[in-house]
Image 1 (tube, rainbow, N blue to C red):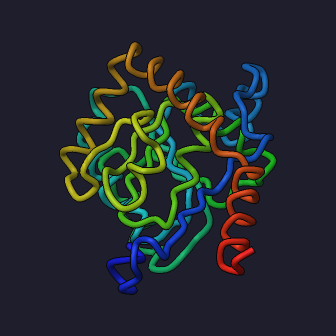
Image 2: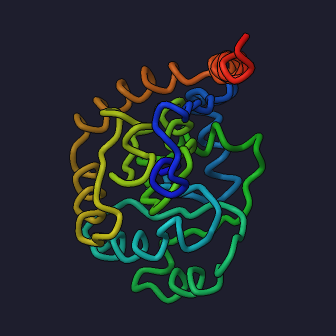
Length: 220
């Protein structure tokens, strides 16, 4: 994206991945039960966690979930602080056909994130544009299978450890959600791949790569 939008040469750009915090790991069952009780959540649910704004593609996510809601026992949980143009998104959530099964949590305390991510049956992140896309890796680190977009930086971030769909296609998002809801073996396979993938993204690695780039720029 930098090369395309800024006209920068590829050999002049160093891509430095972000890291996953060491506190993000699978939470014990009793901790998951407490977090579900705190936020009044059901046993099984799809989770979106991020800023509530248009580029996160929440409108299509709500539409996709609404397509499968009648035959799928998983509720939809949307958590995150308000961003820009939030009202149309919240309105769509409130007016959805199965709105009573959509849980808008708003901002979630950072201390609650590992347990909330661990509690989700599937983490859904159909974002249209990301600079990196850290939340899918954070969900993987907590042992949760991930569905994400096959666009922007996300394929590079998640590799083959997530189910990828076209974020502009509501039917594709719905099909991916239904597939993960129905296929326990696929969920288990993605959990295993996700834990392995997330473990390779550390803040130490980020710092080392940043220092290497500084040295290169300074010709040291």
